[in-house]
Length: 75
Image (cartoon, rainbow, N blue to C red):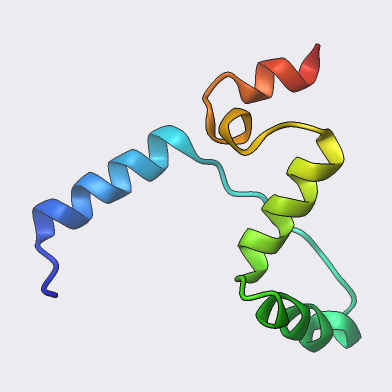
């Protein structure tokens, strides 16, 4: 599938409007274990971290993806 410049621009705009980037630090010695754990679960590291945070915060997947999820977590 070929990607067009307009399509990539639309995706970039959507991501910018709906997501934020957080950086986490883990011990270097744990990097491969974390990657292997995510792969074993059939997920990317990003998806694994998102699932763990969502579950720990006790919110549904729909709430997690909603723009108002951050305000709900602050209450």
